[in-house]
Every structure is written in structure tokens, then in C-alpha cells.
Image (cartoon, rainbow, N blue to C red):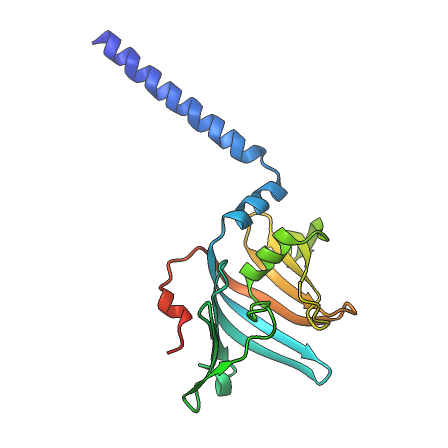
Length: 211
């Protein structure tokens, strides 16, 4: 009986030690390492986000719901303003479709060059950031009183209106807070503010098909 109690106690101590070591290993990771690990492990994401498009004619702002996979598939649906709610653009991995909720019409769009039109999506930023040679990192930026890391990457393709991009990542949650795309002159062209965000959510592939 005594030996059995000793064995049980030893097992509990060993388990506690293992947990302590794993906790220390996690704590010892730098913020940048944690962010890099999170990005490299990401396969898909969902978000509710505010999108502002800036052009020479002014600004247009939309509330959106976005689905995206690292393999390229995406869906962006407009939820506001009311006159555009229900409109969506979807890429199924081969073709891009755009749906007009008011007319009920869905049309196939031409894919621009070698791009599938996913520049506005988080998984596209991950790909560009991981593959870009010209990247910058700032770990001391505050945004809405949150401590952030700002990642910067070059957008391939040579489009002067979508040349570079920056992503603000919360150092605690590792979730994105803000995403900005700049033109070749450094002007903001798209601003995305993430209101809700989820890494690797459960999603059916039907999300990436035109209804």
C-alpha cells in the first residue's frame, strides 16, 4: 500500500513538473515568436470587419463579413449599408463570382492577371508577409490602448494602387486589429478594422460557392 502511494505521489509530482516546464517554455517565447507561430499555423479565418475604400473621389465605408483560407478561397459579404447588404464576392479556388442581392444576379468576373483578387484578406497578408524579403516590424505601437506589433509586407504584382500593406496584431490575443493597404506613393487606399476575428473556425466549403 505504501509503495502504491509513493508511486502515485511520484506520478503527480512528475506531471506537475512537466506542466511547469511546458508553461515556462510557452512564457519564454517572445511576442514576435508567438505571432510568427500563430501566422504559420493558420489555415483559415473568419471576421466581421469595417472596410473603408479611399480613392480620388472620396471614401466609401462598408460593414463586411469575411471568410478566407490560406489556399486562396474567400468570401466577402457586405452587411451594411442597407442598400448594399447581401452583396458578396466569392472565389471558389478557380473562379470569382459577384452577387447583387437587389437584382438576384450573380456574374462571373475575370481574374485580374495572376491574382485571384484576395488582397483585402488576412490570409493573403500572411502569404505576402512570409514570402516578402522587404518586411518591417514595430513592437512598440499602441492602438486603442492595446500594445501591438505592426507587420509590413510588399504586395506582389506591381499594381500601383495596392503596393504595400501593414497589419496591426494584438500582442496578447495575437488577433489582428487593423489592416491598411497603401499605393505606390504611400497613400492609404484600403483600411480594414477588425471588429470580431476567429482563427481556423469550422466552415463548410459551401461558403466559397456562389449561391
